[in-house]
Length: 106
Image 1: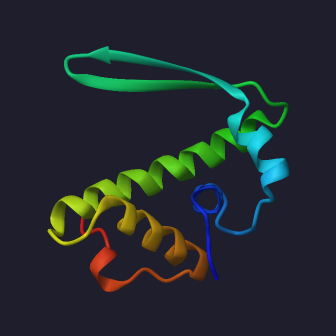
Image 2: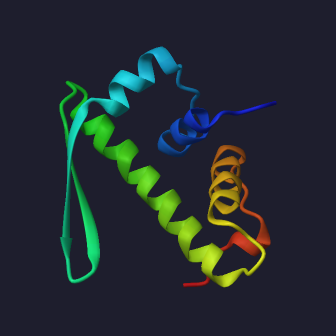
């Protein structure tokens, strides 16, 4: 099975179901974003403009968790890239099993 990046992104947002591109793109891309920088850190503020605002907020939070987990794990493992860790995390969320090397010990 081959996935493109949008499919991985959507499965990170909603690991319980597949989302078709024709419906998921307007849902997840309908928003206004603003980036602010302070003390060397960039913060991204997103304002969803879709009627299903609560669903979008929950999906963006799932994506944030997946990316944060990938960044945390990739720092600990020298031979793992953040994108590889992201894809493994998404697949593990779909199959409900995280590999031992990806378990967060925090």
